[in-house]
Image (cartoon, rainbow, N blue to C red; front, side, top):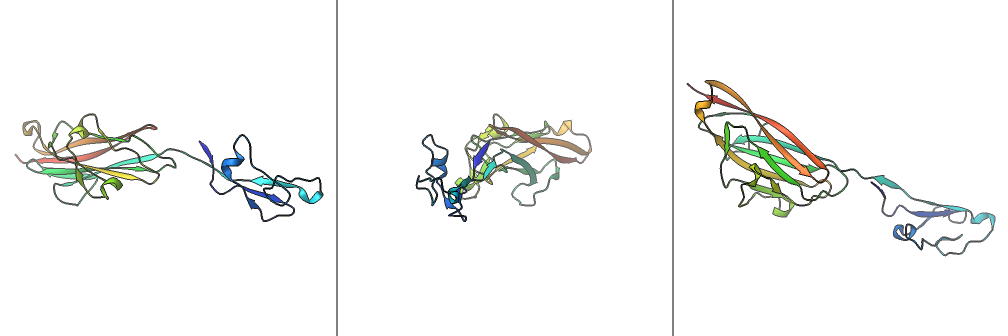
Length: 206
């Protein structure tokens, strides 16, 4: 998608070499914008010093975004990309979406696919973004591990965080020692989806 950079349109003639500003919305409208020898007057003569040109800048817009996830012992803030836990521990998983493109993205959905060894603790989902003054706000929904949570619209550089808590399920299915599991966080947008995997090591003492 190509757009004209705001306030970049100008008229340059031999009489006004430094240029005169033109309204971008008029230049690209059906009636057009007035130009002239001495500025946007509509007065154009055949004199040699009346030659000129209209200049403007344009930018190519492109949608893009990132999704990342980290984990920490529940109630702490020591988040890491690879986390080890005991079978009697609980974890907080934090998923971050960020709009790294140049256009707004609407209806951003975050979801998390947990491994079979972990189970979601109901009622532990919180969201933090500009709508919550960047403070964690609990939401009455478990959709993050189902269909996903719609976080709405995000301008360029906008970001949202989703936090959920999990515990180990099915201890008997774990072998003695270290068990590696993988959870997948996904961000879905109107411009496609992206996912990131995170390793959680579960230590079972036998």
